[in-house]
Amino acid sequence: MASNAPHEMKHRKVLRFQDRQRFPESNSFYRQLQLLVRGSLPLARQKAKNRLREWRAAFANLILRLRQASEKRRIHPLVYLSAGTAVAVIAVFNLLYTTATTVSIDGVELGAVASEAEAQAARASVEENLSAVLGYDYTIEDSVVSYSYSTGLTARSALVDESVIEEALSNSIHVVEHGYALYVNGEFVGATQTKGALEGLLDQVAADYRNENTVSVEFVEGVEVRECDLPVEDFTNLADVALRINDTKEGEVTYTVEKGDVWSVIAQDHNMTSAELLALNPGYDIDRLSIGDVLTISNAVPYLTVIATQMEYYVADIPYEIEYVDDNTMWEGDTRTITKGQYGTADTVARVTYQGTEEIERIVESQTILTEPVTEVQARGTLERPDWAPTGSFRWPTSGNITSKYGYRNIFGGSSFHGGLDIANKAGTDIVAADGGEVIYAGWMSGYGYLVQIDHLNGYVTYYGHNSSLLVSVGDKVFKGQHIAEMGSTGRSTGNHCHFEVRLNGDRQNPADYLP
Image 1 (cartoon, rainbow, N blue to C red):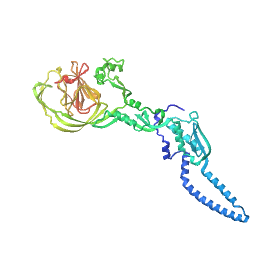
Image 2: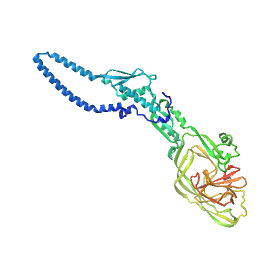
Image 3: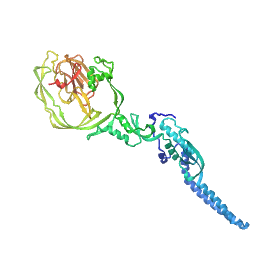
Image 4: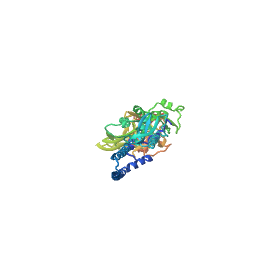
């Protein structure tokens, strides 16, 4: 008899013997025969009553004839009385007693059935059901239990149904038990006999992501609690199951190096130090990265990943528009504020979805304007610039509302790093060069969407991400303020905005430190 069974076969639910008593349909020949006999009993009883009446009439007729004959031959009445008594005793004995098979296990009687065939059928049925749960052929062997039959005279009232023997036999062997099993993505995690206990553990995992504004909480993984029969060794302590689903599991997280990436920035983006990243990727030269290199970011992932959606209520800034007035006394790309703009405000209701602590979607459900934005008027130079060389200072790459600043953000008790400045406005808003320089990248890049990178030839490189369209190509020389792209929401973005980064010798800087 094998000792281990693949878990993928354990989910098959075997009906308990009590259930099979309530629902007796079966493919078993013995069970079908039993059903046939039970269904025929009413008709058989009626025929027996009719036959009994016929016998009584025949018996009365016989007694009458014998009495008439005895009167002629003068036979004593005691003879007839003795014969009748003997017939009655035999009939009562057959009614109360019958031959039957008693089933015992380890010397303990489980009950008596009508025949040895029924006892053998009960044993075969138990072996079949246990084999289905265990995943291998299970046989009740005498070395495990002493299983025996004995046939003899038994009171009819002591006979039990075959299903009673099956239940008692299964309980005595006790290799399978009924309970509740937890599966994550089809993988068996643990089992318990207590109904609702596993659902309670899952609710505890999701509890940290719930508040009074939560709309829904669900798991990324396929999580299922199944009611089924399992081998007794699969039942575990509930605390062990809790520890496992709250822990991490083996699963490599990687990052593919792209153009413009540097080691320290990759580490910073994943909340690591350069040394920690190197420990996961021994043998790499941190000063020499090639596009397409695959770096290991983590060797473990959360066992369960939560996606939570909630309603958020806040006052949002409404971006102001900029109106330009041409000025032929200023160089192209230079601007001067004539009338300063002002942000408007609006009561905002948004449906926000987080995966773990990271925001993956924000849908504004409604906005009520509190104050209207005031348009800013700027003078824009039209005098041809004699040189595209950088000025050494940066200007704002666009106008709009700052929706996300540089640095760490706390969400649901966790944190994530944002390496730039997000400036939101309507789709198609002009994106301009923060300073003069040479375009070193213009195209699609992973989460940035359509991206422009400008090398200012002084150690600084600026990034302009999530554009809807690009107006420059690699190798172009651009001046400060030159129109290089249109605002959009490409790549990993939750709305129209410009993701603006400043990097010095490959290290990210806080753009706010360089902007007027």
